[in-house]
Image 1 (cartoon, helix red, strand yellow):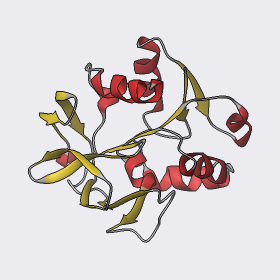
Image 2 (cartoon, one colour):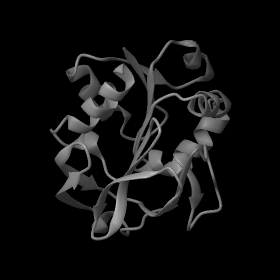
Image 3 (cartoon, one colour):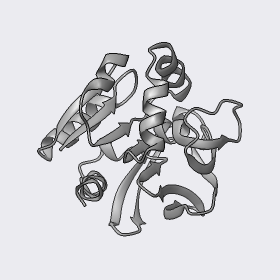
Length: 188
């Protein structure tokens, strides 16, 4: 199994280290030619969604990635990655891939000072650590979207088919269960 990680900005190295620790090889997507490599799943990491959205278009990655996601490529999207997948953003007119039927509020917990850590239940996985850094949350989940976790009555993790969207950064915690669940889904 080989997983591609969008590596134009953000926390892609942390995802790579976590996957390699689980024995999975990775491909970093930095330019259009990287899309020619074979991969079974995609990670859209946390970082700055506006910068990532701009770069995927400038580097000509957008069309190829969107086509793969629409064709059923499994995706794990964390923080900024969730924003890239969202069908609608509350406080931003941009829509990037728009393949996840959710309405997301960017920087919903405020600036860097609003960052926090908690441990909460995640459906099908159990209690997991959740690190929120300038995080969004999901205001509304559309038809067919399964809510996996909420913190203080705000949706922070969802699944829609083979797309996982999370407000937090599982790559920053020692717990591997979210990445393992993603890999298990791909393996089935």
